[in-house]
Image 1 (tube, rainbow, N blue to C red):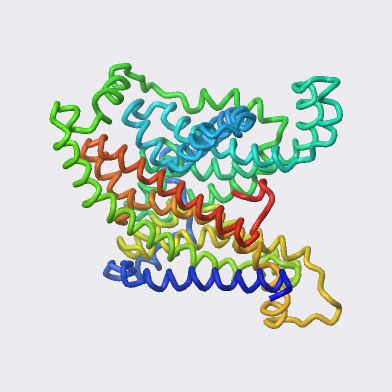
Image 2 (tube, rainbow, N blue to C red):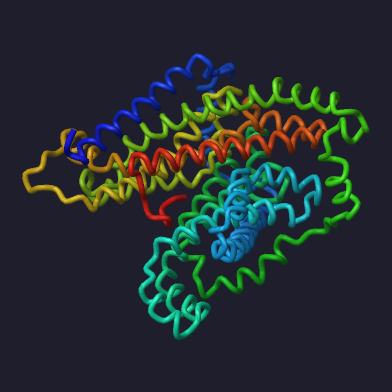
Length: 496
């Protein structure tokens, strides 16, 4: 083929079908059964609660809402500040590798680790959010600095100095990119903050999980509606002029009477996470037996299940994104139709995967099916939103076809490379979420990590968390190679 565009379009379809083929090969190894006695009856009870949402039986619902906001504000703010300074030295390999490993560990895993050190102290939630967010901010801020305009900076840095040129030339030019991405991470922070309630912190997730387990679906919907309104109104209540007041009030909102015991910190680092054979003074043979047993009985089965679930979720995410992006595109729907589509996608992408999986597991029982559907709905809605906005900039001829022909022959071929760029970027994120869904009972790596923590075998848990991080880094590296090989790119502020 002499035409590069045709060559890359053909390559894009080939890599797509390769991933579909791998997903089909994964099906025999996936447990996709429904294990509940009458899932449709339970589904009916769930949606009946939507008709009469109520917060009457919820203890302190608005305090939980304020806790969710406060943890998100403080965690994201601390992460953005630390991430900015890390971005300035991100060119050093040690910084890049450290950030990659830190952000590869899910916020809930960080929360489980810090629970063992600090208990239910607010510092647990703040570090669980701030640490991985700082690593993520560092990567994206560094990318923004790398691709940003440098002419003004290069012009004045020799006369004004590097520091002055940076703050007077580079920061003003890139400020809007930083603000746009940080605002998006605030939405992510609210989702993560809500999910922290599932490990005991007093955010919305705590009350949501309690209401679900008790079958109080009216309360479930009331809490979900509160959360959707919080996300939908983000641009209105999170005004820049009010942000300093929020940040001043947030520490007082999350404060509680928990105390940090120095002995717990020392014991965690000197005993709890030290492999049992070393802690007991046993030899290298006992250490190897401990490691090989953990690897064969837990790590490898967890890795296989995590990869199988990730591959299925990735392919279904792609299908959903391609089906849903026309809902918000002016090429297919009018103003009313697009508004309805926007509302639908906002609900889907605003609901954290963990909460979606928790709902579906309650309805269908423990298997990979709820996890696949939850991951695909959430990530598919995110990609559909991005592709829908991208498609509106496409120029069409006056005599362009309409309906299904416009979709199949005019629009999809022209947005497909951008669609793949988003999909492969979400690959590592889907893998990270897949691992954490093991806490809900699905036999991914998270299942074995949670089991080890419940059994107070923190040495095993830390090793499994390290394996999870390395797996995420490997998939992220493979994703970058594929995006580079097939020239799939996007601007840094669109990436997460």
